[in-house]
Length: 71
Image 1 (tube, one colour):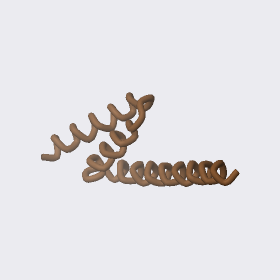
Image 2 (tube, one colour):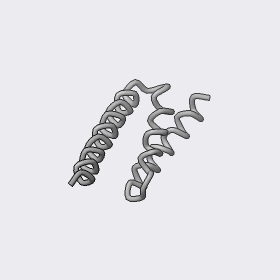
Image 3 (cartoon, one colour):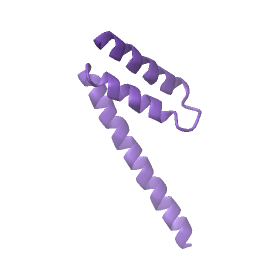
C-alpha cells in the first residue's frame, strides 16, 4: 500500500509542477503533497508552506478586489 501511495502522490505532485501554467493545477500539487505527507515528514512541511502561501495569496487578492470595488 505504501508503494502505491508514494507512486500516486509523486505522480500528482510532478504533474502539478509541470502544469503550473494551467489554472487549477495547484490542486494537483496540494493533493500530491497530502498523499506524500502520510509517509514523508518533509512533505508535511511543504504542505504547510503551500497552504500558508495559498492563504496569503487569497487574502491579498481579496484586499485588492475590495479596494477596487470601493473606488
